[in-house]
Length: 226
Image (cartoon, rainbow, N blue to C red):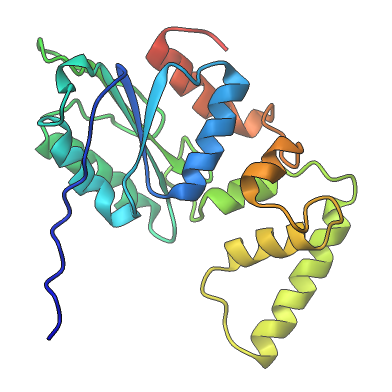
């Protein structure tokens, strides 16, 4: 006899005025490093919604969360995957249903027009961050931030291997993940490391202009210029 699946009911305790919601553990590792790099690690509380399909559900629970009266801003981060327009709309719909301000587009801050404690909301989509016109995920962004001096040669080898694999074995369901992790495994520096350790070894350029939209967004939330 199968057990009924428990309804999604995240335990949320608001401890800081600014909240970042993301979809998974790998996003958490990214934001820990990114916010430290910006000097904003203490300005944002971070929550893993445990899956992109749970982000809208998570937003619904925020108003009744313990400490919700402390909350001033909400930033939602998700992968575009293969439906960036749909992902963009689903985030806006979730904010609207929860009676939060609704941004017009990625990396644009929406301001509240009433006395509600949540005064600002925004969202961004990996990989482009400030656009919902491009498919992809966080791993695609990582691949644009690589710092290895021979990264193009390594990626050429990876792409050739992936092409042969798909011809001879099967189609890869998550090629962006395969490409990134195969690349890392082909370097002596990163082969035995997880993503958190790889970031600490400067495998990715966190000062890249490709991250500027997210830097600008988060700085506008806390009122700083970066």
